[in-house]
Image 1 (cartoon, rainbow over the protein chains, first blue to last red):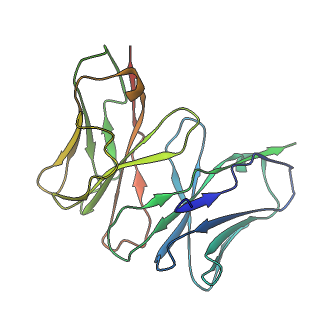
Image 2: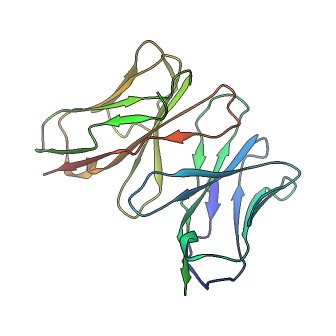
Length: 111
Length: 114
């Protein structure tokens, strides 16, 4: 089993739709979780951290389910500019360590 | 600096030559990471540093790859006797402390071995 797994997609949804991605992780002791966004031929950029109680940033909502070992990202009222690859990131420890990236979920928003 | 700086941004080299890739992390960040990404693929972990030490080198593909970090700041990734399969984008990131605020990436070095 991979340490971090994501559905590769692609997800192709119309503008204005709500879309959700899940990411599962294998290490139950993992401490920190993040969602990153990567545009074509660009470096990954931090979208949001994922907190135990769940957190929201505008149209984006992230949730953590420790019991089932997954994190999720919900995008509401999707925009054309949301088209990108979304990467799930897990740090197994609270200190610096090898951080694990999922292989990414491709999202394409159509007009 | 304000962000993570990588140089060169592009490098074309002949098969068999050695290359050095440089990463200058955000000032004060103690952790530094190297990843590589082939076209259309995910991020492949290479190595990370905590200060000048490299606790995890498990991702280095072969002994042709080495990395060092000096003064807790700049890091150099060296690839000896480059092969065509080394062609990829090499990404550097830095973080913390604290380490739960995420990781900032440089814009990468695109390496092409011809």
